[in-house]
Image (tube, rainbow, N blue to C red; front, side, top):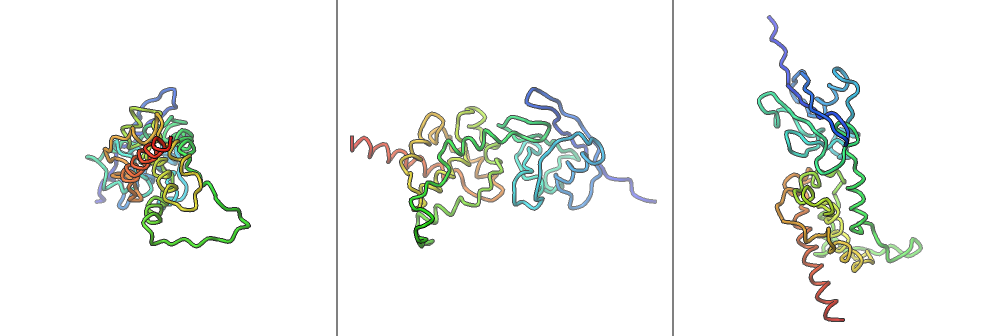
Length: 244
């Protein structure tokens, strides 16, 4: 006699930024099943109108990030067996971002803050100049390298309680990018970056709670990067006052 099929009670958020509701589906349970597998099963077999976002499925792009039982995660790398709670899963769009539809969050605000933090390289040379060798062993270069594996998945942004309470706050990813550029000798806009990250929504809003570092799937440390940015903005302000 065959065993009865094991199932999961999976609750997913349905709706848009204007409003929505949670709905529950019975999903077959399998060994080595990921949360993204569960979402895909619902879309393929239970409700074809379910909207979600994914691409690589191997933890390289970060586009499948969602809230799973209240915690932001890459769903493609999250095995159901590690997060299921008494046979139940609740899957929602990333926190702190507007919702386009269902499980797909609108990333515009996240990327706008990256730009607001001057998180773009400011070159000091043209493509006609010879390539300058960079010593990877210097402390500054090591600090710059520490954050370059950020893939803009917004997990840290969704985990951040400061963003939840202050929508103007630039957020962990943007400030970590600013720290990377501040330590990159090739970047030519140090003062511009420091001015950008020290304003009303800047680094000094961070309460150092550490959720950004705790939940980063790439094991980066945005909290330490933000601490570095705070130190540099204070030093910059004191030097400017001294020179005034």
